[in-house]
Length: 521
Image (tube, rainbow, N blue to C red; front, side, top):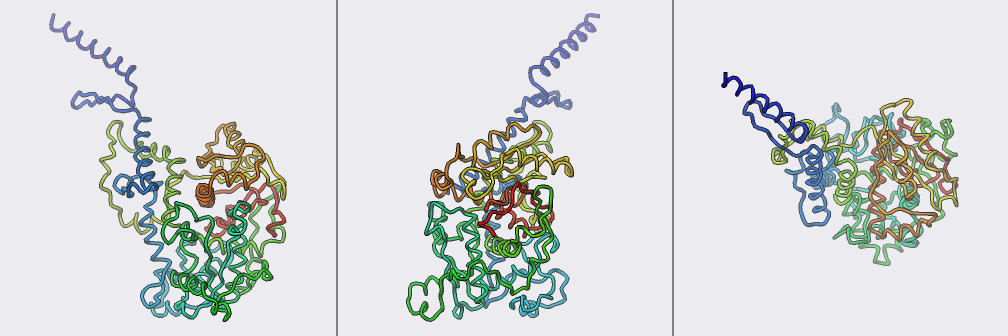
């Protein structure tokens, strides 16, 4: 009898102990192992999320500060972080000729019956001579032909061939000035690219290799070695290394200029668009909506819009290892916590440990197929670019609520949309975004304007390095989003749209609060 009472007493004590543990240590801290009777007082879910994000952050900042190499073992389970060294090596392979001028390992689409020698002959000729060519496999173009501007793959092939001749010793060159060299505090990155597209037009029409001069935007401590003050700090070089080296060597001599081997941009060329491929802009399907109406021809600008999109895409076809690392940091700051939460959901409470994943090797599927998807970001994601400040000089400025009205329009068709990549120079826009419940806003961590500061003053306040790093990170993040709400009167929104129209997103469209301004016509 006493033994029975004693057993009941122990059971009661055990029940009260379990209730006590349940109250004091919530379920995500206390895990009871019924096979051993042991209780595992693990970290909370939020603490484990924070630990995982910290591992990623410490590694990435070490890479950026040159104090550490990218630890692939610790980051192999980070879906939003890219192996920049590996991708850089791949891009170099895809963007350069091989031994004896051999074409890089991208050619015709799979299924071609041509042998390698026939492919070499076909690929080493300008396709604008004959637009009826086999389907092309251009490694930096995503989506089907109908999801990009007309003739995008064909034109990208021809631009690459123009910039990568087999023999640079016989090449002629156009030496392209960056406008920021002349006015380094009064011109933005978007306007810079628009001017460069005009120079590229002249180079292609005269069958010259375009080589850029020293780049003001890369003249800072982050761009090192051969990439210092060069476009290649952010993206792969505009031409082959052999051609760039020869052009820069010749540019210091008087005779090559006198002989016409090198020329500067002729401003009389203006905004002339090459017609080497006919007039493909006339086949552009309307994809920009203003005030509820699709614009068939964006303010009579489709011709230049088509050409600028081709040039922007070619120049930014592959990002540099440096810019890749900057994007890793930006994605981790914006999406790291979301990625960590998803990863930890896949493991029993209390059993996750970073050491469990220290030896990870990619499967053939991951390495050869899934890698084309790029780093993970939470989708669907809407890009909203808000331009205010001193832009009222050449366009109508709209409040943030007008942009959000267009974002709400997207929800009618896609009710699950609730994430926004927000790019803006204005602090008031960031503050106003907090008022929209049911939306999650992501943006770079940078000082923003307060009041109507001139853009030139704001750029100067950031410092050259921070300004250009933030610009290119925002540009590529916005271009990678699924949908776009912006302001067509802004050169930056214009640039985002150009990249989207040549990366398989032309059918996603562009909702704009205003039309193209006169500077872009």
